[in-house]
Image 1 (tube, rainbow, N blue to C red):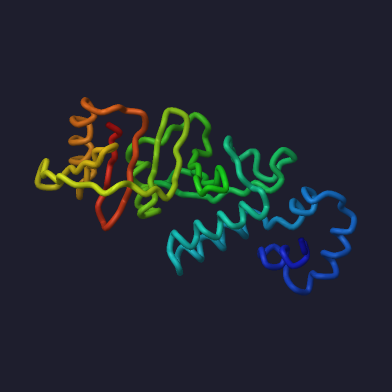
Image 2: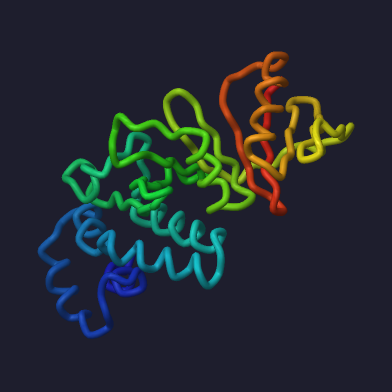
Length: 220
């Protein structure tokens, strides 16, 4: 691996830093030390993520961050803001999310593309309003909330059929595994979801924003 090239390509250094990088990297012995040294700071990564999101969309921004996390081994299953750049997680970087005035973070959990969304305040839980806000920020990504965490991932479902209107704003459809509630109004959709939930297995809450509508999925 050419660490000098990687350092410049990743945005933490510029071409004029090549000699400096070569000399500094020569003092480091392990790959882990070298990756930690050239890993761009959170401010740079967040600036790139925001620019890509605005110009190319959420898919491109998420792809950028997944590639960076993979190259620098910056995955975390139990992230916290206090861990960023620490000895325990030198290449961990966190994407900052402002959700309704509150500070949250996003990191990738694994190379498969599952991300975690978590509060800067450990005790704060993500409520329904915040889950729908995340879904709007990342259209077509599935937001899944359990008792322990909130994940964000691209998920493919089997085709849904047997569509039925529940209200003027909400309808449902089915496949072998899930009941899908599709709505134009969050409050109306949640009310229908809670009624249907009585006949389904509640293991997690799954929300997706797609084609300007919200989908909620219930496992049968």
